[in-house]
Image 1 (cartoon, rainbow, N blue to C red):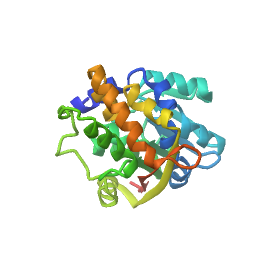
Image 2 (cartoon, one colour; image 1 turned 90 degrees about the vertical axis):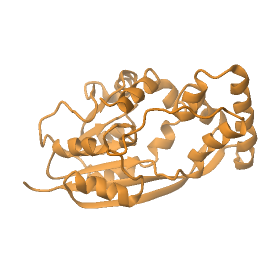
Image 3 (cartoon, one colour; image 1 turned 60 degrees about the vertical axis):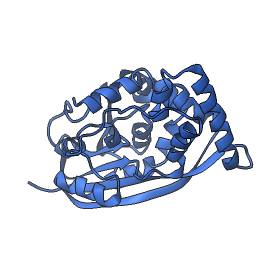
Length: 271
């Protein structure tokens, strides 16, 4: 693993329950479009990599697909198994999956490539385990960030947080632009054909307390910054969160902010 991969493992260790109670619904939004792009249908052998609590895998199983799901985080695997994927979910991580070549009709990775230190190697591994004529589909968060994701940086800066520490990053030589063109290039570079990428845009609505629960439980960049922060800074950050979100509450009191995701997919060509 790269230093970035190791950092991601530490950040997510034991956080399945916190994720389910905060950011899971946001990440579930593209699930149907992701499965459509992968051609997930009844009888298809589908691999869901980075399944988290099993949201995409369960949806695919509901379509009648023969689902196998894996995740790098043990707490996510345990949660997915308890949620109905017992016997179909195992511990495994990109870029090395414990499956033979061409074992599946399709592979999907929902917001997983954002969390790996070598995106090209990760997509190449997804391609390896899919048969010729099958499809690989992935979602990523775009950059520049949409308003919803920008909120955390605005909150931290408004609270007067100290300069953010340098955290492990994907090496420049291995990184990819989080844009439609960047994702098309990533998928083509992995050897996929008929590659496409589209931007999915929507307004995410969440209870402000549920949304705050993400960083409050150590999830995301703000969660990392607050993990060892003084109590006074944590209080100021929460105060600024309440202040800045007040202008974005809808009639039901839900936080409503625009966001977006990149959906890229391609076909595995014949040898």
